[in-house]
Image (cartoon, rainbow, N blue to C red; front, side):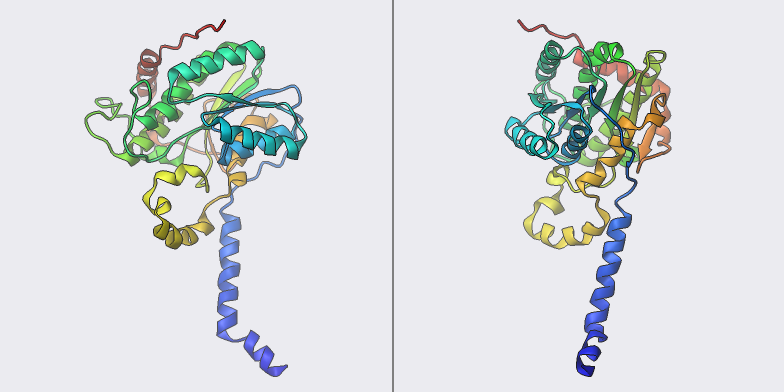
Length: 329
């Protein structure tokens, strides 16, 4: 017995135990705020982009659990259907639908909206969640740098084409998933589309700053309509968005670095909490043009308060996306 006790108290046992406890404590601490208010979303119609994995999928899961009718707007329909089936079986809510919407194609966005309007007369919440991060330079079908095109231009068009339904369903909400990376962002007026030079991190930061400038300008344009729009940072979340980052895509680097990062990364479920808070909390019914993180109001970078830049970006985005809806027979 004495030998066993000595073994348990030996450094070989005590230190790994203490380190494990500390790691799990840090992990729990880093999960951020939780949206714990129970709300009844029956009768509410919601669109969530990029919702077949990660934060979007967990957002849909919780919305479905609360009774909402949810449209999963996704590029990959196979993954979308698999995610939908899982969510429907778990929540017993059959009013979850998959619809194709490729934000890298303005034509696909227009077709999605036209199809949605044929099916629904109301839209109470639009969650612009989809995104790409730090990818090698490529362009969308319309010639936009991919991060600018998917993270900003696609959502800009989608939102504008749905404004009439959102206004007709008021009070309604628009949620733009941005990032803390906006604090490092700069709108490159002379090379917005990264044609002269390209830095994958800089392009991502620019697109996330664009999300907040878009939120700010849209909030002003929607004053008096009972349609609110807010942006948020979900945290550093373990999702597929990291797939283009070298130390996560390389097998051996992933083997070494992921365990080191693990305590500081949120789960997808916890990453969805601020989205749910901004979309559902009754206390935010009249809050608009703001930015949240960990279910709390946060300040934005100085560049994100530049009203003139927000107006310039809106004008360019409007010119490039030509937000007129097409009609389907």
